[in-house]
Length: 289
Ligand SMILES: Cc1cc2nc3c(=O)[nH]c(=O)nc-3n(C[C@H](O)[C@H](O)[C@H](O)COP(=O)(O)OP(=O)(O)OC[C@H]3O[C@@H](n4cnc5c(N)ncnc54)[C@H](O)[C@@H]3O)c2cc1C
Image 1 (tube, rainbow, N blue to C red):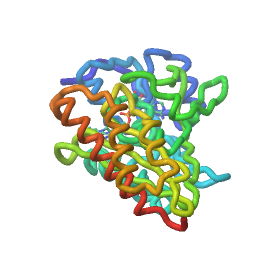
Image 2 (cartoon, rainbow, N blue to C red; image 1 turned 135 degrees about the vertical axis):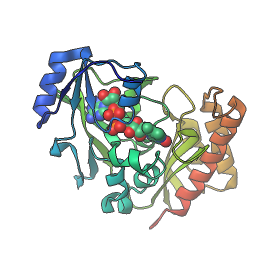
Image 3 (cartoon, helix red, strand yellow; image 1 turned 30 degrees about the horizontal axis):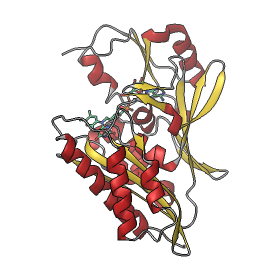
């Protein structure tokens, strides 16, 4: 299977990407790692007339901390996420999850921005961004706007990204002392998307959970934030009863469909199990509370 005919562009500056996006509109597509876009083009599910490769733009890569935020360039690869000392020290859910994405070839090219912008409910990073309450910087020729990940995902392959916008940065609030986090994913084999997965962040103070977020992957049209699951552990000591209540709430919130990865019942049960495991691991990782 081969893609349709397209013209290839490799600009060196963000402004040139934005100009090309404005010029081509619906006919232009950003190419980052290519590990979702190129398979779609080979299947002729996407037939852009213009491909705009962003890999030559150094300013779109890198991970830094500024003013209480961890800022990640959209074209930063999953391999770079895994190797980041800053993330491994302060936000280890991202390197942990990156290690569960696909295989080394995909992780060496696939980018965090592509994962977040793609809009596939099977992608792992969106649920993590919901749990972390991250926001995305979207830029077009008119300027830039910041949008919460929690407002970005609308439906399968439908997001708030306009066709002339580029995702340039991801902003993650630097986790406070006393915060633990975990991503738990069950898949059929290495390199596969999740049957179900859960991202959990929780903060503890004096033995009580003061804040929490629970988000789910691949069990709905988009990544899902389970507010009820978080409520079940907030204000508790995160004991076994609270964890069971949270797992029940996550199972009630998810909407999986039956497919080659399992029945609705099985995938729902896995949401419960992944939620339990993620809460338990996040709790075990809380330090300094
Ligand atoms: C065998 C295999 C297994 C996989 N398994 C998993 C898995 O388990 N979990 C998982 O999460 N993913 C998985 N993936 C997908 C992989 O992680 C992709 O790399 C990711 O979905 C997209 O990132 P990318 O950089 O490759 O983006 P691309 O494929 O280049 O782009 C994807 C989409 O996002 C748009 N886009 C990319 N960057 C930007 C930007 N900065 N601004 C605006 N739009 C942008 C593109 O135009 C395109 O529409 C797998 C892929 C393969 C081939």
